[in-house]
Length: 330
Ligand code: NDP
Image (cartoon, rainbow, N blue to C red; front, side, top):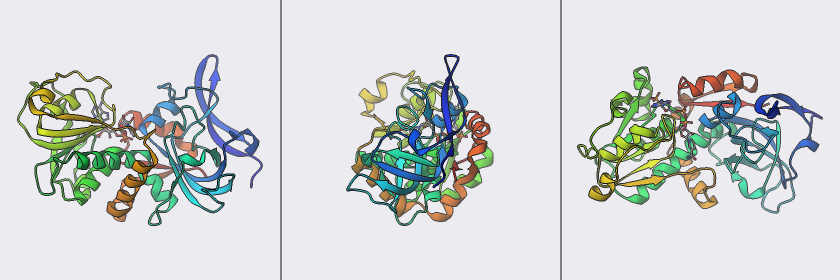
């Protein structure tokens, strides 16, 4: 084991959070029960905010950024995990209150770990990452709600060419739901058709404020954009349908009315991945293992070295990243 290794650390510089690469040793890591040798992390939108300093993600400093990690257990004081186990961590406050995945080694609590499904390598699991696992949580939530039907009315996915959106399109299509992808990037239509999207709607069409009750079009939807886009999605959802909302890539506002809810029984399902209980995580990862086609997954992500994090953070915040970015921390 190397004496020191490189991590991306957010530090307090003149009262402001500022990120940079820094050497760490094992003795610098938190005193949690499981030591993981990290192979890959990812770049999510939230990571873009943390790395660029454009959002205050870290709630204490210094903080190792990176909300995901995948790797191998090196040492464990927990009976649940042993050296050699292949594991994933998504969320659980990594990069916010707990040190995260942009580090060759990390110590974590045993209850944060999910077993890496056999069908995925660590790289592939991070190709999915928090964004993909959140997409699976959204699809689970819509199915539990019960109004989306294989071969039935269209299911809307907003921010479709992004990380959450791409995986949501693929999972919904695989389960037989007709998927309409909303994207601002027409050049991604071929990619999204390849994942299974059968219809497209320009994202601008969902960004113009419309009447509170519009033509009933969507049996359900997965929204990672928020703002007027989400309001329109709700206004266009069928009686009794639901939108699973997990993101704010467009806006954190919700400038709508209660009318879709009280006149059409439309439900807004909130989806949080960070503190989701273990049973939901395992179910979401089981769906991903079962339904995410390996060729689709390979087409969704690129692998980049940790040294490119600052540049990539700017790109994801500017909406210029297609699909997912895996960060090689080795
Ligand atoms: P990405 O940047 O990969 O994708 C977001 C997509 O949203 C973009 O690709 C783009 O899609 C669309 N978009 C970006 N900016 C705008 C805009 N101004 N107006 C309308 N559409 C826009 O991010 P992720 O998929 O990783 O994350 C999406 C959102 O979900 C983020 O807000 C993130 O914080 C949130 N999230 C929440 C989680 C939770 O636990 N609740 C977990 C994971 C993510 P296109 O080019 O197709 O138009």
